[in-house]
Each structure stands twice: as structure tokens, then as C-alpha cells.
Image (cartoon, rainbow, N blue to C red):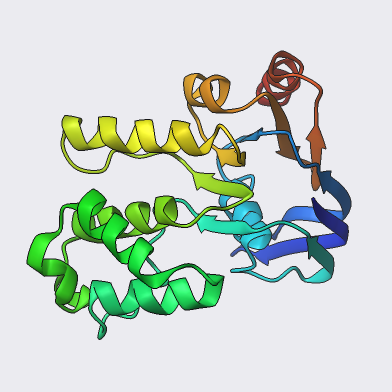
Length: 217
């Protein structure tokens, strides 16, 4: 379970203050996969980073009682001076995963070949995304965070990524930000709407969609 307790988050813009959350109490229960809807600029990606612990709230506490992934495919946490293999070993130790199992899986899944043993700073953005996605799939999490499912590699590789993610969905929850209702309906069983400084979680995707359409009108 993930809980937001009196959480507030805002940003200063050139002309005003942009409020993401205001004294929000939110519970993301286990056993539910939740899609997050909101207008452009509502702060959906910021919300996901706060859930992940990559960004702190201005006020309040976030309690995490799950084994939680970083945002799926996010490559920003890699050390560019280290090789892909050195990065995955470091991350495996943090999560207490078996080093040999993770390295074998990532080497096979990412298809990076000899690049796995080269510094990450030499990678293209696509290669970094392959490494990040493969590493996400190599470690079992209770809940996966997804900030827009994007295509990684060619159609064959994208199909492999989709199949791997669906297999993880058999025993893990998802919190997903996406503009695609198709993706949300495929991977989530309910949805939430972010707006007006609050996040409202609904019992069904259809209820959330109705609320989102009212917000967008």
C-alpha cells in the first residue's frame, strides 16, 4: 500500500503558482492497478515521481509499504561513467536481487551485446531505454510505475517488451500515467483523475473517464 498523508506540492511559474496537490490524503491499495488521468500540465509525471521517491513533496508524508519500481524505462538514474553491467550490478545490490540472474536476463533481453560492458554515456537514447526496460523486468516488484508506455526499438522488440510487461502484470500492480485510454484499459482495472490540487480515485475506469471529461469540458 502507498499512502499520501497531507501532501502538498506546487511550482512557481512566471505568472502564478501551479498547484499539483494541496493537503491531499490518498491511498493506493494493493491489488488494484490504477491509471492516472489529468489535463496537460496537471502534474501527472510529478505525481509519479513523488510516488517513486524521486521528488519530495513540499509538505506531508508519503508512506510506501510495497516493493516499488522506478518509472518503467526511466534511464535517468544510470551513472554514465559506469558500464551497463556495472550499473545493473549496483541496482541489483540495492534491491537485494541475485546478480547473476539479473545480468543474464538483461544481457539476453536488452540485446545490447558488447555494449553492455561499455560506459552508459556512449549509449544512444534507445540503448539506454532498452537497458532500463530490461532491468525493470529483471527485478520482481509488487508495483510497477509507468509514465507513458513508449516504443523501445523496432516492432519485434516492442512486442517482446509488451509480452514481458503483461507477464509481470499477472502478479504485480501498476500505477500508470498515459494519454492512451487503450493502454489504461489494457493494463488497469480502475483510474484516478488529478486536478484542482486533489487526486480522486474511482471505482471504475468509466467513472474516472466521465469525471475527466467534465474537467476537460
